[in-house]
Length: 384
Image: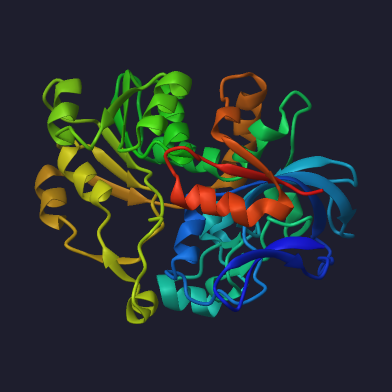
């Protein structure tokens, strides 16, 4: 089959790779209909994730048709159109049973390396190197989906592919930012990042009852899209004192909830030592959110582009009494609800798919996504 692969020369190219096969009774094989780029892929391309090997297939946000079913699969049949959660979880471990599938003990392909990196094993992910606990990705004609009864979900007939594909990762990530940030009716919410996840975090805040939602970014095209499609107020950080402006929006206090959804850096190349120690600068949006948030408020960090960072304002957290949380999306918990909202037209995501490419032009799509982020929000690939 054809797939977008990493090459020995450090480039992306579409090449021929072996077709995926069922490896256990709980697998299905999905023929991909749509697969989207994501900001979480960019650290791979800039060398921040060690272990990427020639032949590794990228991509983790996708939907498609079931074409083969393992003997132990109970919820899917050949021909089903399904959206697949970007992260891989078993559904049976201590964490999965408590509604924390991204913390799964058994979803990683390399729990030992995973534990060395994070302190505990966490869920696997499509499109990540095996050394990072990953599985072959979705920028391909076919994908093997492990634990299919846990991570694949039927798409309602009324929900189109360009809407449903974002239920795989961006929509559950945005929902987690608002839900775990504990947005309540009447809150003022600020979201850093007007990309797909940031816009969907802002929409989730509206759906959870926020009174005022503000999105902060430096790309005018993205800010315009957030105003037009999500109905939020926006701040262009290039020419505005963000903290002062947010205080004006919130009666002088600062936002009740601040969500950092900027994503991985597109152009930061780390040294070889930094790639393996994970050292990086604290994302400016995280620092700004901590200082802008009202006393006693909540800061939620969705960015997974940096591992160990310096100069975190811990004193500010203590003296302001902030709650600081972070997390990867719990799609296995949220995707059915999000698909229902999509079917009811409460959650619209088609506008996020700004560029469409056939799979054979996927490398071109990634270059556009990486180098022109203000114009290309997400590139979506369609296999033949």
